[in-house]
Amino acid sequence: MDCNRCGCEMFRATLTGGLWPVLLTNKKKGFAEEEKRCAVLCYVCPQCGSVELFAEDPKKLQLD
Image (cartoon, rainbow, N blue to C red; front, side, top):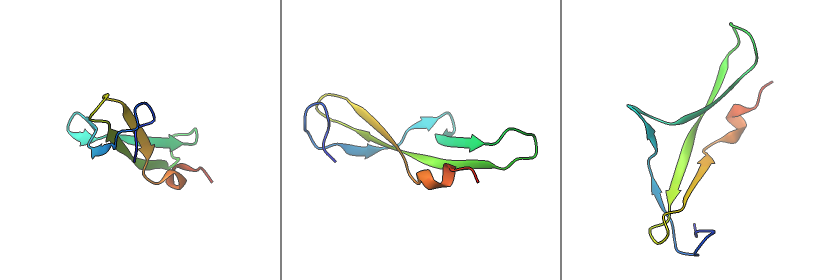
């Protein structure tokens, strides 16, 4: 994947939030509703330091 800012090839990195990797979540209002989860993919440009984040499987976040 090429950097949008400088065109250099980006590399994959791990973005952590404490002890665990960062997750995206989505849920309907209500206590008993199921929470949808999806991992976050992180890419870093070694040239300019730009960071790109992507949902690994965004369909998992869709509410029924």
